[in-house]
Amino acid sequence: MARRSPISPLNRALFGTRLMMMWERILPALFPFVLLVLVVAVAAQWGLFLTMPKWPHAAVLGLGMVVTVVVAVRAALRFRMPTFTELNTRLALDNGLKPERLLAMRHETDQPRLKVGKAKAGIAVADPFALRYVALVAAMLGFLVLGPVPLSRIASGFCPFAQPRTFADMSLAER
Image (cartoon, rainbow, N blue to C red; front, side, top):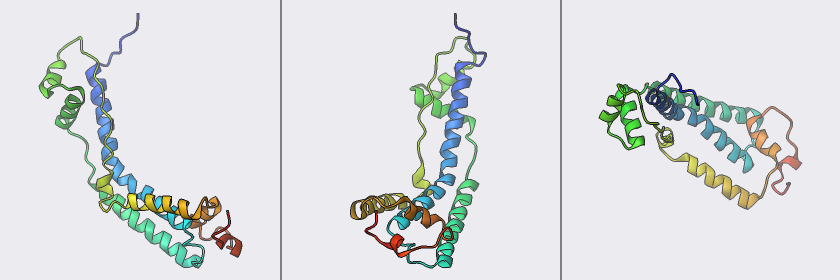
């Protein structure tokens, strides 16, 4: 005989829904960092940083980080915890029930198992200009035009002072 959890299925589902909704609301604050990494990697793939001097390269990375932090902080300031009504409504929609039915379940001892729905990305809020698609298309086009590039070239886009650049590194034909 399986032991029953002291936590009711309704409370477990509400907790899971709360975590999922918090993740959905935190994601727009984290996505600008992902976008910055993607844009720098694509620029390095295309070799835009190979001929750039080290200090302007560092300035471009610093400016990108400042803009990313500002956008992430603005998104983080819009974060708010989901209210009980939002949790109840979302859980009811995920399970095909009416919200009133979930309220009535609180007083039942034999509660059915409830499922927590999948998280909705909400990245469009964090990227209103759809730069993620531009960066992905540029990365795919770069792979088609340039072929596979050495990882050292992409890594050099993130570390302007790491190692001296040689003409062999600058060659687009090197693989």
